[in-house]
Amino acid sequence: MLLARFKGLITRDAGADRVVPPAGFTVRLTLFTAAAMAFLTVFALALSLAAGRLASTWGEELARASTIRISAPEGQLAAQTATVLRVLEQTPGIDSARALTTDEQRALLEPWFGPDLPLESLPMPQIVEVQEAKGGYDADGLRLRLQAEAPGAVLDEHNRWRRPLVAAAGRLRLLGWVAIGLIGAATGAMVTLAAHAALAANAQVIAVLRLVGATDGYIAGAFVRRFTLRTLTGAAVGTFAGLIVLLLMPSAGDTGGILTGLRFGGLQWLWPLLVPLSAAAVAFVATELAARRVLGELA
Amino acid sequence: MIELDNVAYSYSGAALFSGLSLQLAPGSFHFLTGPSGSGKTTFLKLCYGALRATEGRVSVFDTDVADMDRDAVAFARRRIGVVHQDCQFLDHLPLAENVALPLTVTGQASVDQVDNLRELLTWVGLTAKADALPPELSGGERQRAALARALILSPDVILADEPTGNVDWEMSQRLLRLLVELNKMGKTVMIATHDLMLIRAAKSLVPARILRIAGGTLQSAGADL
Image (cartoon, rainbow over all chains, first blue to last red; front, top):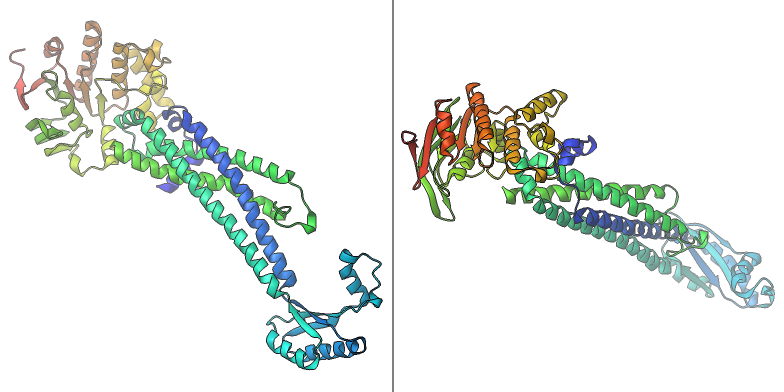
């Protein structure tokens, strides 16, 4: 029956369209609600996808990286660095390790101290960059071994500070989807109320249609079609407005975080196309249920 | 066609009538008369499934109404043309579309049916009003339009509740002749009316059975009319 009704949505039935009196306040209410909800959904979707991108970036870039900082008196630094590299070479789960050059260390500090920093004259620790193999390594075991063989070496697992950030981004993404779910439910509730009001206000029309032999399916179909198409129209307008606003938001390029990255990337721009269709599907189901209930009450 | 067997009906516990039995045989013509409030309209509503009997059995086209779901009732109504006392229409649609409404809801609105519609509007004298909205029509015009709507699907049974209540005598005669003509074509007709002149006029046109609801029972009448 639902399939037949959906088919009826696509194949226009001019007669069924006309049996329901044209519009009242429910039209404006449905259009406005659908537009507002779609507008909000676009933002929730953008937030969710941006949070997902961020979590994924942090995860990929930092998940398998660690650093070892070696602080030792000048005469021992080279020896401890060599020891650390040897230990790392022997440690299972380490994919690669290398000591940063002076230039690379200067580049790391440049944003804070400027390009003219006389690095040679400062007691700078040596940084060793470590890339884990797929299975990871035993951080506690490595830490103990380093303590014994190169006392100036301190292992800094990026995972330690990355994990809460990735978790936070994951929560934001979840929050976005929960918001979308709530918006969908609210849209369904509003359409149900509007459809219920329209059906109740048209009790006389329903009585006439029944008198001349209209089935409940026909009567419900006329209302379902009207509310579904109204919602689709309103949601399309709201989605379009949401996309325009997103496009006008400032972009910070690669350095962007959640706020400046609140837009879609690449094929993600196709996602909002689902918003009007989903809203129409919600309206379709909500009106169908409301119609069945009201027609049962009016029988 | 339609059979009532020992039927009772109560409104909020107060019995309107009880023990009513009647068979509307194919091709029969019945008048139902009785004082206001005696239950004529309720009786007709029981006949087309708009109300369910409190007791007893009503069967329409050999199916017990109690066993019919709403869709089954809708399909049965397509074979029963009903003219209501208060002539309900869809006020936002022009008269022609209202008359064609049974065709629309049954998916039969086709070009072939347009001729049928035009002919019917001509017969009830409403061609000039085809584009008028129902609120713009007089009581008589509404009643004629209701009759046209009831006939457009060429139903097997015609149930008319005071069909001549708001029309002049000439139009009453015309409508009666139309119903008699339909009856001669094999349609079953039942008219609820308190217009005794109409019943007397019909006696010379058709062998009608006259029933009277009074005091909660159904009696044969006619000898005194």
